[in-house]
Image (cartoon, rainbow, N blue to C red; front, side, top):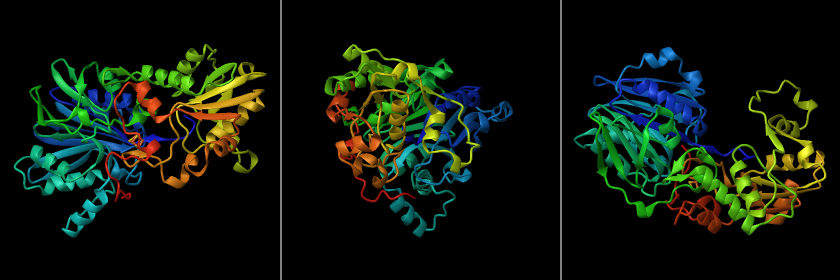
Length: 457
Ligand code: SF4
């Protein structure tokens, strides 16, 4: 992906393991792509909850001694990229609360569209917020619930809110997991030597050696109890599923699986479908590394074209030491992506990206390819035009920033400097993923959950 489109968070939870904190740290490493701003782990140790969290990547927040200072047999973990609430230490998760029903810790992926109204109401009733996250709204609703247990209080809180979300909640009885009624954000169940765990993606299960059991169903609330059982507290409804299409297009790791389906293979099929809908008059196919390479592979295979390594990504880009006045904006792109001139010189290039959101980077990329000798650059996007902001936990800022909104397709082609530009259709996404339905709201404007008062907190 040439534009920065960022996932909100990743969560993990496990019960009944003496090494719960260490396993959770391993899982968070595997989920690091879902959030790089902060990381945290909460453990349950003889009825008490201990917490370690901080700003930065997992390896920056957790040294070995930090994990060994977290004894306990059940744990939840979280990596965060902020979509609501600023990037600051108090907003790092899990959030720890001591309520009259007992202590609990919350880890949340996604976005609650009515959190602002709920927060206003809670503040009028005297609640004092410590963070600016929508997650704390759930914490306050649980703490104020008149239910008889934390499990009921959690279900009570969720019944008052809507959005796209997945939760892992640590209580003295184990770990609660929940997915929004449309299953917009993902959550899967696994098992490690007879003990259950849950995670945003299966790559985290693989990282700790757990077997995949099943998806948490849309609207389902489960409890992983400390004896190894999985209780369904609120049954889900799989027929309502509208998993975020961007999980398959871009967010999830290619080695993860979704509903038993390989993400890598789904992306390859997106590329094949794109080739059927929009074949390019090209000599060579390049994918924008790394996320677009499976789609480029599928595109090239379908058209019997060679896919070659024409773009190389520098994984170790830090801050620039060159005076900003001395170099162009393009050099920022050039530091991240460089062109293998021998691959593109004198050839017509089909450049495959998984999405086009703000478009600025793509403009620089087409220029780099031409400078390296490409005679034509045909840009193909393995998803539809991104026209509407996401309200369910993906950072796309506001509508004005979306380049595809401002321009018709030909104007957009000129803006990014391509000889031709084509997008995959929304129907093509469904055809390629083989699912009856997905959330496609950022492409179609049809939001599965109404977003009337979804102002950011
Ligand atoms: S609006 Fe787009 S990014 Fe947001 S959940 Fe739906 S498909 Fe995913």
